[in-house]
Structures are given as C-alpha cells and as structure tokens.
Length: 108
Image 1 (cartoon, helix red, strand yellow):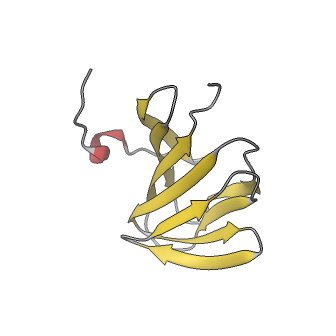
Image 2 (tube, rainbow, N blue to C red):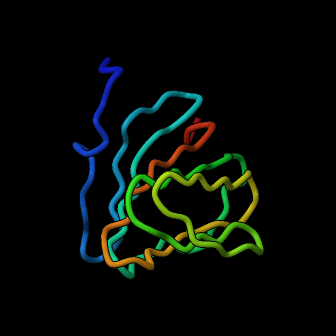
Image 3 (cartoon, rainbow, N blue to C red):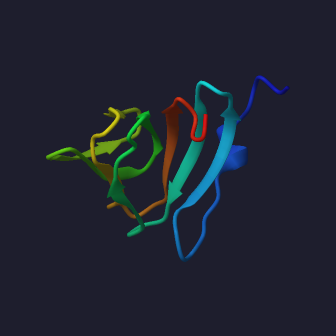
C-alpha cells in the first residue's frame, strides 16, 4: 500500500458534475477529494451514520451545515456531524479543491 500521496495527482474536473476521487479507504474512514469548478455545487444532503469533514485546499466555497451558511477558503475546515444536512457551492473564480473525510467509510 502506498502510504504517501500528493493530492495534486488526484485533482480533476467534469463539466456536468463535480469531480470526486479517493485517496485512501479502510473500514473506518474514507479520504478523498471533491473538486468543484466555479458555479458547481454538491447539493445539501445528510449521512445518517457518518461524520464528514471538508478541508479547503484551494479556492473558496459557500458551505451549508444545518442552518448555518458560511464561506470557507484555503486552510479552513468544515465539520458536518452525522444526520446534519450539509453541502457546498463553489462561489469563486477558480476550482475549489476539498479534502473530504467520511467516518466510517461508506458501506462499512
């Protein structure tokens, strides 16, 4: 197993929907990237049995967590506990790159 990865090797885009890639996955956690081009969004949703975080690597997003809507940019972390609605929209002029963690990993 490769224990060291450069996130920039996993960045990408899709014109029709935000881009996702997986960095690491175990039974306990999934770490991946979500990449959103300007104007793209991840619809507000909830995970019934998973905590989630977003760490902003590049860009700026408008995040919804529960009733709170707030912008976050490079270096900021956003936490969404299980059962709390959350989502994000790229409100900047450049790609928004997010390190995302889900625990436990989906399907485990």
